[in-house]
Length: 324
Image (cartoon, rainbow, N blue to C red):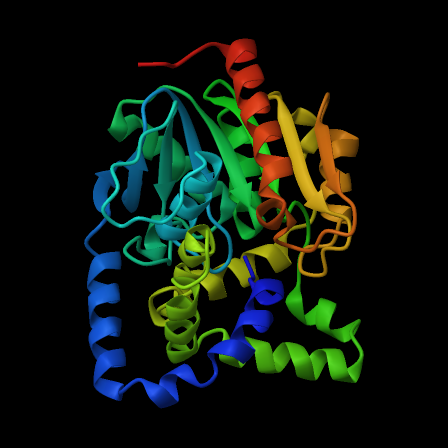
């Protein structure tokens, strides 16, 4: 899940922070944040391999398949927005749902061997639910988490209470092919962004600025999930390879209630990916966000999240409650 449309407005403001703050301050922050990331989650051994995850809340289960790149931290950032929460590292999060946020294979502490293909990742999600003692779950596929979410709905129909796609990849996707359709300036611009977006000092500057902005906490959570690309790179590379191999999915076979949220001007995952699901999945609902970019589901959270909550309530009532 790219953050390009949120990245640039803040990047210009943050550019001088590293020049003012000492290198020692940055290094201390880097070490602390990395240690936090790698200790605030759990790793469980399933019958299909180990997988990292975090969870909070109590109630019907919602499993979140994060984007590309990402990790359990990105899924948690999305869950906290849905639970209408701001960033507070000392908070005890509560919710009317049980949110389960795994790191897909190749990201953070989930080894790539646990599942390279979307099909294998869907089966790994089911194995994780087994280990956690959960029978069913609604699943949310964010951007590059879309293929594994779709496969969970296809391969485990009795366990899937609902499918929500947020700017999700649903069919063949190849970044190189998308770049070929851009102007020379567009390709240069994207290349510059891709070099900066894996540069941790830039995020250090951005995150410090966000602490000064009212209600900047949820954006802080999202941007934090882009840190430390070196421990997300294997998953990113694998995702790109897998997405390019997708031909077609038997979307008409999906039985779960389905909601698709997508910006009509998304230039990361084109709107055609949303149309593919809505045109084939029986009864699928579409929340099109006019003029919305890739993160429109996030930037328009006040509009989107109530619809997601309503859908989760509806899908739970349609396919049976799993409240505990």
